[in-house]
Length: 119
Image 1 (cartoon, rainbow, N blue to C red):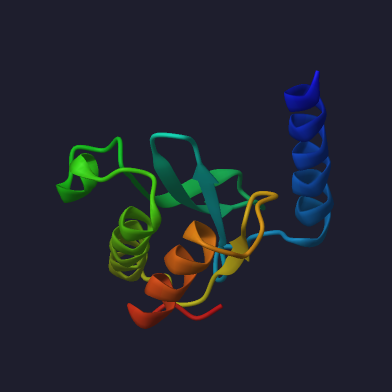
Image 2: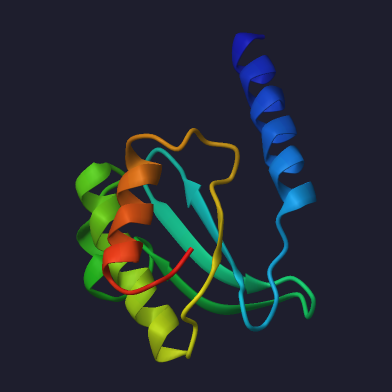
């Protein structure tokens, strides 16, 4: 019962954020998703409905051995920024996915900024 309410409140926060944030081809939405075991980052063009670039702890890159903690979030942030810059993305809109800008989310965002992304 309690977890259902928490999930419902997080979903409402996610929808409230998504009403205000949209990604374009020139400035895509950087959507982050944290599970208990993995971290996923996508760069999404909402006007076309396509994912331009992505990074995850599930992918078969150097990040596959990382876990969903602050250290892993920093590494994924750097990797995601590198993937985005390779695709020509310099500016993004940050979508924190209903999570507080604190801890893992903040570490990922700061690492992406240091790697060269502007948001």
